[in-house]
Structures are given as structure tokens and as C-alpha cells.
Image 1 (spheres, rainbow, N blue to C red):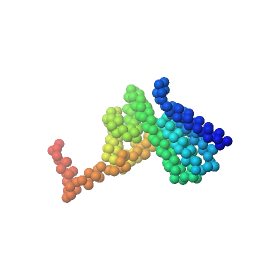
Image 2 (cartoon, helix red, strand yellow; image 1 turned 45 degrees about the vertical axis):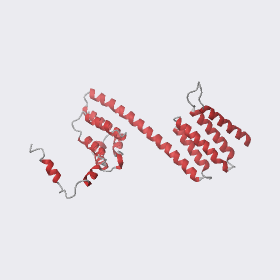
Image 3 (cartoon, rainbow, N blue to C red; image 1 turned 90 degrees about the vertical axis):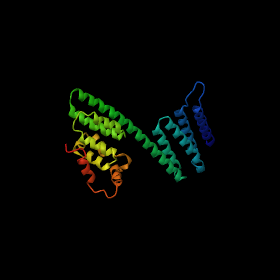
Image 4 (tube, one colour; image 1 turned 135 degrees about the vertical axis):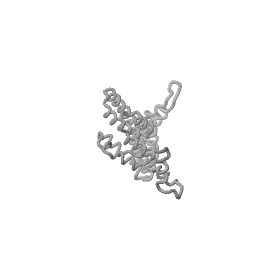
Length: 254
């Protein structure tokens, strides 16, 4: 029985290597099939070697190789599940290796979630723009402005400040003070200002999904205020308010 399992494992490995080879009529490696064969080889060996604990690391190596192939072939969910199984397989023998595998699993899921969110935000931005165009055609400018707010929030979550600024510039409303404050706070990395704007009634009473986007918006750099840094850079001995007084009359009395 053991010999049969070994032969089956070796057969899967040979198939995996074959799938990775390229030739005159085969320009691209078949990563998906190779990953499947590596996985089968690993599980065959793991099942056969459970009584021989010193052999489990070899089985885990094959599972990791299969996981890498799944990632390269664009199937991260399968890759993560393989890594998780490998962690469970070896956790009683090598806890440190199991922890590493679980961390890899978490990283795969995290990266997949980021990619999924990025795609969703891209789709949302396009969808909102189409809605704005419709409302513009029927001259429903108040709704256009609400869509602009939603669009700005989506672009800022995409870390696309330029697109968000362009939306405000092209807004169909003269009352863009709140959005300008939002952009200023975001640009100045002032989390307090951004949170204050996003907690205002204008944002809080939007559709629930967009209200959540506002409440979860985080400025780049972890909220380090540029304004605070600029204040620290002022020369010592400058009297409070002196700069404002000078600016007030800089252009004359008109």
C-alpha cells in the first residue's frame, strides 16, 4: 500500500513537471494543471506519511509549491486553502512552520480583498459617473451634486486625489465648500478635518453605503498634519496673529 502511494505521488510530480515545460507548439506553462498535480502529489504523500512524521515537511513543501502555482494562475482562494491545509497538517510537528503558513494564508486573503475592493471602487466610480450624466441631461443638479459627493468619496478610497479634485471642479453646484474642506483635509493629511466633514449631516444622511465610506475614510500617512509641521517651522519670537494682520492689509483696503 505504501509503495502504491509513493508511485502515485511520483506520477503526479512527473505530470506537474510536464505541465510546466514549454516547447515548439506550447508557449506558455500550464500553471493550473501543474498546481493541481503538485497538490495531489502532496496529499498522496501526506496521507501515506502521517505515521512517519519526519516526512511531513516534504509534503508541506509540495503543497507550498502548488499554492504558488495557484497564485500565478490567478486562483488565490485555492492557494490560501492549500496553505491552510498545510498549516494544519504540520502544526503538531513544527508549530513555527505552521504559524508561517497561517500568516501566508492571511496575506493571500488580505491581498485578494484589496484587489476585490479596488475593482469594486473602479466599477462604482464608472457607475456614478453614468448616473451623473443622466441627471445632468434632465437638469436635476441637486442630485448631480449628491452623486459628486459619492464620487469624491469613492475616488479618495481609491487614493486618486486628482480624480476627486476634478469631480469637485466640474461640479454642478456652487456650494462646494464641504467638498473643498474634505479635499483640503485629505491633502494636508488632517484626519481630524476629514472626519469632521464626513460626520456632517451632508455626508451622514447620504445612502448608507456612501455614508459608511465617509466614516471609514482615512488620510494618507496616518493622519500626520502638515499644518502642524508648518507651525513648528515658524521662526521663534513671531507674535501670534502678526502674520494674519500683515496679510489682512497686504492688498489694500478694497
